[in-house]
Image (cartoon, rainbow, N blue to C red; front, side, top):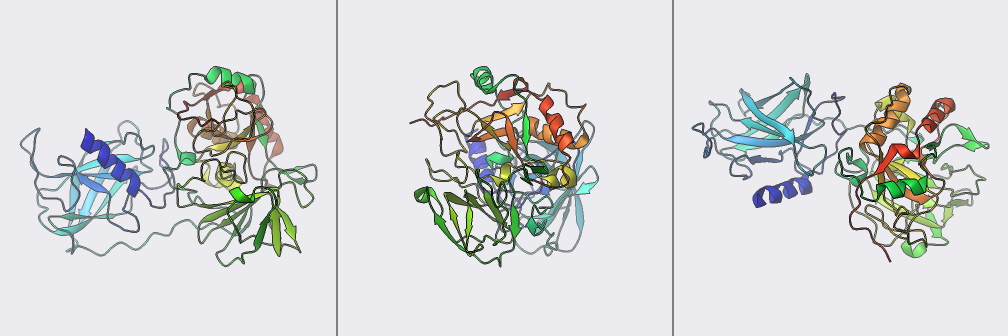
Length: 458
């Protein structure tokens, strides 16, 4: 068992590719076979010895007389209903194709959204070197990955690269399904089956059992766009100087690629948090400011604090550091966005929320607290809650069900002090405010706290 655990840690470290989506009851897109970083070589192991490629054509058979090698591959976006199966085919350098018997399909422990697929090498497949292997499920075929049979090398050329989703440019632009942070990032983890925290009842009660869920976003409120806006820029956007006026020692230094007309939370005259969020789509980085004010028409900016996040990385901020948010978390990954709800029809991440009284503590992925209250019955920053599986959401509109399903699968992450049960989203003139207000039918009593480990306190 020790070797299995070590190997799965190896898988965890090398599953660093751009992914579209975790699995759902029905596949919205094709399965994705995992590859090593910046490579088309599959993450794979021989199923008996647990060794990596090159794979022999035969291997020891501790459970029978069939010595043909079994190879285990790993995939995301693969979930089967009863009676459905997976097929697999390998192609060698002479373009001969070999069907591979799929003998096992199952989830990988401790890696949410990752599925293991074990295939048996075809009887006529010899020492051919590299082959390209792909799988098909529910009529959708995956990318093909390269593995070595007998030796590494030779084999067919790689398949043409598949274009990744390209976000549009501009304020509130669609990301077209591009994944924010790696699939194994905390924001993207399925917590629907995680254990409940033993103090869940007290924590929920202190945030209000009868308090309504409140969508803190929509069209317009008090004359300004309602929500936390963002803008997507290209890699050629000119960086400008950022002058930090309050928390400079815990801020990532500039310059930041902030457009002169970048949208500000609350509008140009807003007096609140004035968050400014900028996504560089070409370098896949996120720049965020708290209480941002343009200087000289945006030639530079003043801000209380700022943070930069590599959206291809799981790196956290230094322990004890704030960000543009009180919890030291990024804001953008936790927003409900119009393009997710109506274009993708699926939210594949946790959602940001606030609580009125928080604890002087935090739990990962948060890195900072913003309270003097030491009560263990108050929520620490980074606390995760989820909508109970038993809550009936069938009476809500299809769009609101998208949001509510995310609350069951990915939950809410506590990110700031504010009104209880306020969830964050980006403003958009296309939202239907009346429809969003139906979410207020959900109460605090409909939630439960996911078990917390390693709570950091003073």
